[in-house]
Length: 342
Ligand SMILES: *Cc1c(COP(=O)(O)O)cnc(C)c1O
Image 1: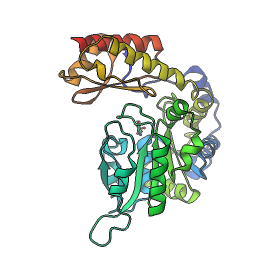
Image 2: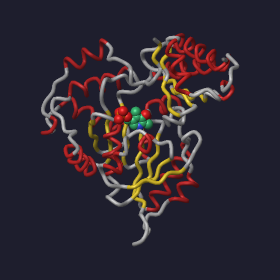
Image 3: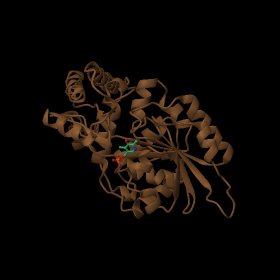
């Protein structure tokens, strides 16, 4: 099976397992795990922030990051395809009591005019006030799109002028950085809090880091514990993330090549929908399935040895990663192309 459902399906490499086994650890609820401390300060420095907080998942890091800005009864703005809106099981409303309004985009790209149209920082006693704007880079359901720096800068300035918090869901910020060449610190400088994920393209088994100010991270640590996310000798997991930082960032370029090979093979089939398969910017290819339901396309691909995920009634997604080669991705694209060609 060529498994392209997600870049979360990777297994830790031998080198990563060795690093995990050798990691010094301590009780992280007492902030005594040296490996976690090293990971948190290293990621904070990379993104130009004061402090970091290691979390079990990206959803938890985003929940804590957005909650750093928004009190119950206030709102966060994001795009309608955002992971925080679609894929975090309503955590932001259900657990931290905020509401959400969205702007609509085709490919997840941030739209400063749309943000300006929604921003309501001091809405008064009768309307909900905006306390945070959230941006995702790269954009997952948008097809791994890299947010243009100009648009992010415009949104960042709008929020700063309005006194509204800025959270970046950077689950795949590593991919954006490798594809665009924009330094991580430049991305980090445009936001007050940033989450990054290690269990996607970086190939660690578990883990995300949230960064922000020391005060914000101290409050996030309390909320993390309240939500049941305090943990003990999790330095074995942080060691995998440190190993990934050293060994798996630059190689993301290989995943981007593999994703382009997949897209090219789908297009080569000339089947329905294949004309709409653009060259991916990073490691995610979103393919519209035309008149055939996405679930049926995914089932047929699975029978032919290719696992894809269904992300809409007529949309499938393929994600390249550490455990697939460009040649395998090309073969998988040809399988999907044949199915679409009927
Ligand atoms: C995967 C992902 C996350 C975090 O997901 P978890 O499964 O909770 O780790 C957050 N944002 C985006 C855009 C993602 O793709």
